[in-house]
Image 1 (spheres, rainbow, N blue to C red):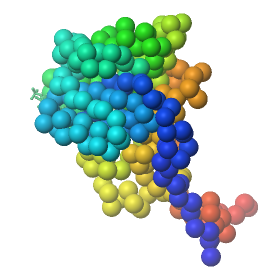
Image 2: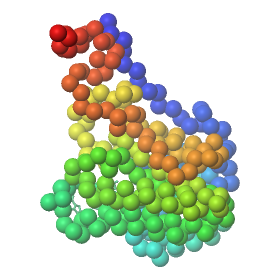
Image 3: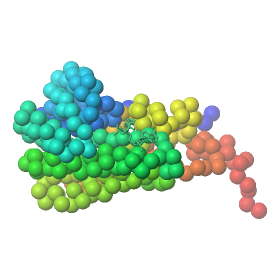
Image 4: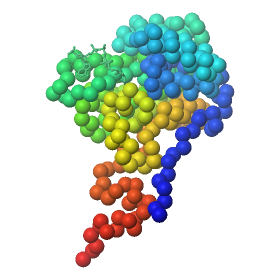
Amino acid sequence: MPPKPFVAPIVDSKSVFLPNIFKGKVLFCTGGGSGICKAMTESVMRHGANAVIVGRKLDRLTESAKELSEATGQTCIPAQADVRQPQQIKDAVAKTIATFGRIDFVICGAAGNFLASIDGMSENAFKTVMEIDTLGTFNTVKATLHHVRATQGAYIHVSATLHYKGTPYQVHVSAAKAGVDALSAVLAVEEGPRGVRSNVIAPGPIGETEGISRLKNHAEESKRGYPLGRIGNLKDVANATVFLFSDAASYVSGQVLAVEGGCEHMRSFQLPYPQAVLDPESVKHMIKPRL
Ligand code: COA
């Protein structure tokens, strides 16, 4: 019998990091009303921070803020703003300062996505995603920087792995996230001397997100070989968030941390995977012997 493939455990950050490492800290998170950014916010709050979640839909934000407060015992408030509108983000920052008096951590996570080819999308469609993802990140950095300098805090920008290769139907997101990665590197270099760090988290395929439900066929996904035996979980991204905001990452800045379980290194392979690794004998007959 070939050995069973390994399946990476799904770990709660509280089993690794102390529960109070972010006590007294304040997180400002765009896109925090749902999905990956909501899970990131929850993880930071579970370690003692209060948070402000920012987005366009006030109903969803209000509901999520309530859920996050109840789940963590910390305080989360909603701030309605479109990251494309600099004044709206400035107002959300003002609300944060009026409520909590400081900003230690910023997650730039607001993003837009849909599936469309270059030929099949309008100029305005491309511009819209560039404006939400790239300009929105710049607007958020501009509005928060003064406060993050004051606390010698840190930024995490939520990017993607799509743009490491040519991903069809994702030209808008690929271009926008490449810009986000570049922006973070400059921020790290310019603000490092003031004690501010900036890093990127690039989630790979993460289950139970809007993106994966639209971008992936679940049936096909389950058949594909993952180096660590499973698709990503929201907790995987949340744990990386806790690490990067923690003092354990005090010398980590300007980096892109891809949370993708090794998937990016997989090429299409003629032998069955992971069978060829776990049970080499079983695939020997598929390899021509040397003459
Ligand atoms: N295919 C092609 N073009 C699309 C599209 C799709 N599926 N969805 C939107 N567009 C185009 C629109 O047609 C419009 O272009 P046009 O003016 O030339 O017709 C342009 O994108 C802007 O769309 P609109 O819906 O007016 O902008 P918006 O600012 O209200 O919302 C999004 C933009 C990206 C947020 C919106 O498309 C959306 O809700 N997407 C799904 C949710 C989402 O992205 N969540 C984040 C997951 S990471």
